[in-house]
Length: 208
Image (cartoon, rainbow, N blue to C red; front, top):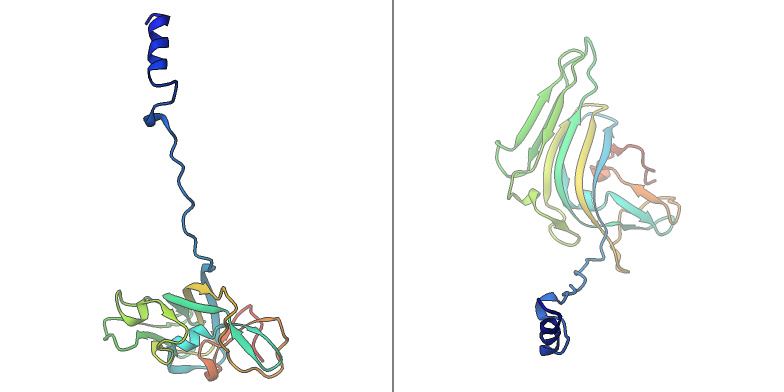
């Protein structure tokens, strides 16, 4: 195209860039301030037990920070239970050890069970039934007494609980279990079975 025609075309729109060539700037997306993580917390039994009901409150009380020697505050604001895995230790010539995990109130189809044979340990993998109460997000202050699952376990049983967690992100706090001689500012992991004191957290400071 001759130079004179190019100049005419440029002057015809005032030398401005066409609308189609403008860059649209997107605004920043909304971001929730809460910290959310997926975490496996491991427990080990110090005695045989069961059937033992694990409640919403048991999970909410799992991770706490000590405010003083005798008070704690929950770190978990809400959670979703993903999976529970359990293993017995297995021992040659020992009596068979049985592990059972069942979803509370959702029927026998949501039940996992295994027994050890000789040195072969029992091993159970259990997940909440899709759409059941124990498959939903749970929050502080709602249905805390409701059972999520029931577990029967031998001594020295290892129990891994996989959780999606949303941690407390504001200045509100909910009191956790009452300790006796905790160190203020320290993080603690409480027993999975609460006052049952049989399913103790591994590799975490124990709440006194």
